[in-house]
Structure formats: structure tokens, C-alpha cells
Length: 243
Ligand SMILES: [Fe+2]
Figure (cartoon, rainbow, N blue to C red):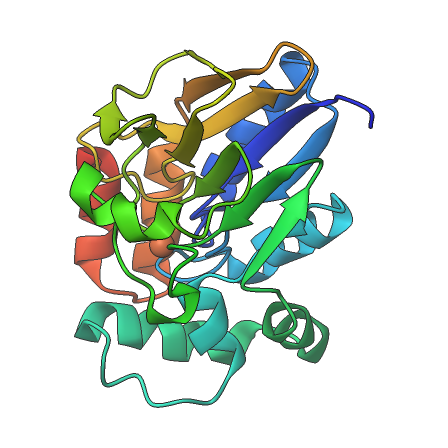
């Protein structure tokens, strides 16, 4: 098996400025392959451009809840009204090819020996959130690989399972054999950990290392596009707060 350097992206949410900055950073870091843990669309104003770029990158992507609901004409009652409004808006903008692409994304998949899922492997279609070590326990029962990447909370995190599950700081991690790692790559397009910079991860398969990256981007332009599209102003404000 070849051992490339991967950029692991997630929760891009239609933020073209953030995605462009992250891809430029990954290129400077000599990344060779791109993968994505889902939620390419929703919240921000450039869903078509982001889907098109991800498709062109040949980026293996799993299905996020926003991808799922934007690609299917389903009830949005379970969503916060702001999220539901953007989903309806996004549905109207995506081309038939893009809807087809999103609706065919897999819930989870294996790439070069690691797994990817948007939420958790135990119930991927229930879109559960994992913030605490305890919440990762049932996921680990289904994680057959050393490494699994996920997203969904928009908060970068590392859950490590040795004799018990611990939550570690999202910094450089060296993969230790005999342990399992469930790694939240944070959000490219709408970080919620108090840091507004775009978040993603570089996984160096040869060095067996995971590095978290934070990338500043043109937030003002992303905000102006949200406002020009008459999407909820709260979505623009939260970009600069990182919440
Ligand atoms: Fe998301």
C-alpha cells in the first residue's frame, strides 16, 4: 500500500473562501490526496462552487447530514430554523449532477486503511454528536481500524482508546500501535471552537502522524456573500466569532 500525505477536510458548508485557503495551505504542505468527512454544503453562500471543487479534486467524501438533506426532498422539521432555511436555499442552487453526487455519497468508507464517517460508526444515520470521551465509547465498538476521522461537531478533537477512552488535545498526534484514534478534523467553513480560522488535518501515512492545521481566510467576503444572498445574518456573524 502506498503511504501518501492526506488532507482530511470536513464541514466545508459552502464556504468558498475558507475552502480555497485550506487547499492552498495543503498544497504548500505537499499534500498528495484529499478526503472529506462530509457536509460540503449548508450554512454559507457558495455550495455549488464547493461541490464542484470537491468533485474535481477526486476527493473521497462521506455523507454529512446537510449533504443528505440538501440532496433529498425530505422534511426539515428536525433542523434549527436557520439551518432549514439555508438547506431550502441550497437545494434550489445545486445542479442535477451535484444533487446526484451528494445523494450517492456513502455513510462511511475506508481509504488506505483508515475509516471516515461524518458522525459515528455505531449509528451513522442518527447523526450523533461526540464531544466527550464517554460519547465515543459505543463508536469504538465499530471502529475496526487504528484510525477513523469524523466531523459534525465543528470542534477539533482526538479520542484515543487504550484501556479506556480519553479525549486528548487536538495537536500533533503520533499513532501508537495497539491503540485506536477517533479524530474530529474540525470545520473548514464554520469552526465552533472559538477560533474562526478554518480547521483541517494532515495525515502523513508514512510518518504515522496527524497534524491539526488552522488557516486564516477572507471571512469578510464570506460574510458579504451570506448577506447579499439574504441568508440569516447570524450565519455571517458566527464566522468571525468561530462559534
Ligand atoms: Fe456540519
